[in-house]
Image (cartoon, rainbow, N blue to C red; front, top):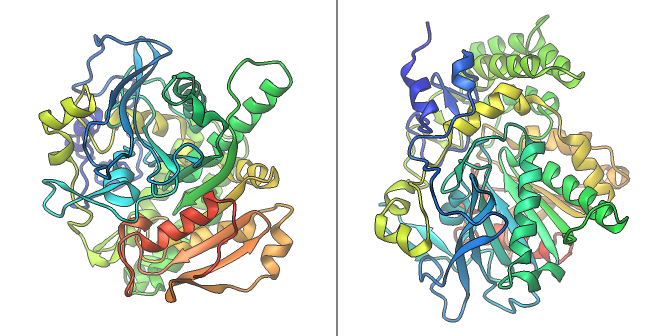
Amino acid sequence: MKAIFPLILAALGVIPSQGVIGGQIPVVNGVYGSVPTTDSETLKVADAGVLTTRATTPGKLRVKENSGVCETTPGVFQASGYGDLTSTESIWFWFFAARKNPDTAPLALWFNGGPGSSSMIGLLQENGPCRITNDSSSVTLNPYSWNNNANVLYIDQPVGVGFSYGDLKVGTSQEAAVDIWKFMQIFLSDSRFAKLAKNNLGIWSESYGGHYAPTFAAYFLSQNAAIASGKLNGIVLNLKALGIGNGLTDPLTQYPELMAYAGDNPYHPLVPTSTIDKANNSWVSSGGCRDQIMSCYNAGSNSVCAKAENFCNDNILWPLSGPYNIYFVPMKSPDPYPADLQPYLNNTSLMSKIGAEVKWGEMSGGVSNNFAATGDWMRNSRPLLENVINAGVRTIIYDGDADYILNYKGVEALVDTLQTKFTPEFHRQAFKPYTVKGQSAGQFKNAGPFSYVRIYGAGHEVPAYKFGSLEYGQAALQMFDQIMAEESLSST
């Protein structure tokens, strides 16, 4: 019988991380990406500590301006607070204006994964204006922040994630897309941000963002078309860029590469050959992981897809990680880097300054349970990604070569499987060295508006790491700036 204590924690929005800090994958019964085993564990209930009696303003923002937290560059505007979708659904955001030319700079949206993972991870551990210190007590200014040349908007979603709070209604990536489009309509209707509506827009995400980002982008494009045809009133979202880091998009293509990476990667094998053989048998056997994912793809019900998620993660994803950090395999678990955010974000003085109304959690158990109930994890987002690329949105898939859980072998298999009008050109290309100021940083390809890059020495959160003589996040910033400027990747 499986232990019940982790399930109780999950229901309270507390996911045990097995000693891994900076986790973006839900843990149930001690297994990454597993599925709760009873109906009561998947109820759409509010996480512990969420208050539903707040004074909300449906359809509007509640904002704290220039708190002085995180971004300390003189003259750079910031704002944080809530966008109230309804009287019982409030989305948390933290906006940072570009350090250079904010009026004309593009707007980038950042979403962490999970499902149920807070985007404050990206802000404070990865690409924001400040970085958490190793002792989790404070932050330092980040010279390689993504708001150097772009306005960046970090969003905790769905409702219930991070500082967001309210009724937990979202259990699929498509439902999440609807709420984010509504939030962006509220955000860009506010007088403080309305001028950004005309600027280029980019969607950036990682991890479960391999589902989120293509779904959000495709939905934005469909809503734009409905507005253009007069079927819908709304603000056109000027989508020009899409970025996905170490993303889960097409499980059928990506899962077999877990065996490949566990046995052969740039660092060391993760488990004995016998463990890999056992996982491979779980993949190929009749009724095994491969067959179950295919059943999910073939118009599978929620229960079919949830069963596939549970089986594959219990029998393949989890066992192959061995004693190593699933997000950064050079280190064994527990790896204390990146540092824990909770001591910093749950300081009551800081919360007051930025307008946060509930205690922050890295992972929402309620939200991840909702997604587990629908089997969204094992559904295929590749067709949506292909549609967005074919629509001409400049798209980059990127990954760090030290990540196991969504490793570069699986991501490159996904990229090679894409069927777009730019695919033949992509296949004709050879990988080229990606350099940053002459320093080797990875390898890449371009084809039309599509790019792929593998970053050396980086784990699951690519901007959180450094390589060679480069600084933390330096290679990731060059990649981000080039894509947001509507350019192909190029070495410097």
